[in-house]
Length: 222
Ligand code: NI
Image (cartoon, rainbow, N blue to C red; front, side, top):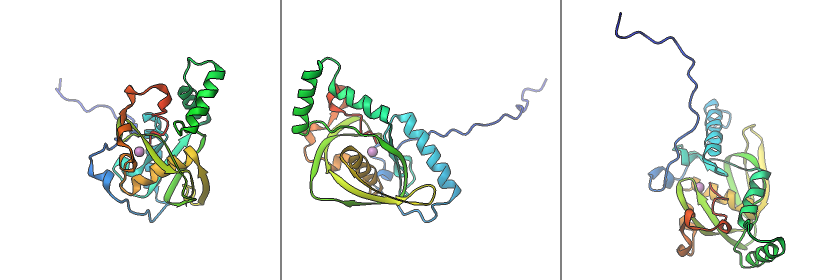
């Protein structure tokens, strides 16, 4: 009896969940290079893997630099269900409706809470952001590359963004609020910027486990 017998050939399922770089790794500080061929098959494979990685990690966005590929590509998605869940969580389970509405209103006035909105599943190659107006909104963000932490980050309330979709067509949209925040966060990754660098008040940088439900800390996990 031989000690070693070759195994029968098996179908190998390629693992599609990618490792996510964490703050401190040099790839996250790189300015990503433009993608010259949006039709390249390896780009399709990368996007498929990034989608699976984002879903597995529970994120709402992911930039190619976060999976060690310094190219100008981001994906993002907030389902209607996810938006509802995040908004319910921040409202908290214990309040009755009237009290809840009042509190949310107060919090919105104080810019404590930014409503999470549904955002279509988007693959954006070589994205460009144009800022619309000077108005800023400060709200919670977290990042898959900065696990366990969240902080309040000022972002432009309204933007116009454009880029190439995976089908080769140009995507051009205007976005406000949470949608605009998410796109700004992801595109910052392509310029080597993590959200703590955008914070103006570092005293809000917190472990999500120490924050209450209202922090909405995981909403913008990208
Ligand atoms: Ni991020």
